[in-house]
Length: 72
Image (cartoon, rainbow, N blue to C red; front, side, top):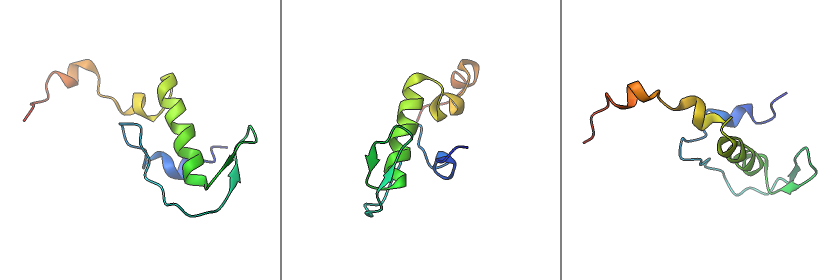
């Protein structure tokens, strides 16, 4: 089960997830405590993206599509 599924769609291509600062402590699978679930998921999703298996890679356009984009 993906306990961060609710945050995946909000994760930006730049590797950011906007979270509130509410204090609702939660522990991840490794036992590390985080201030709240959003911050825990932000760290998890960022690590996935850095490994190349995360949201950033899936949302990237293929090279053929990137060359067709017009820069303003």
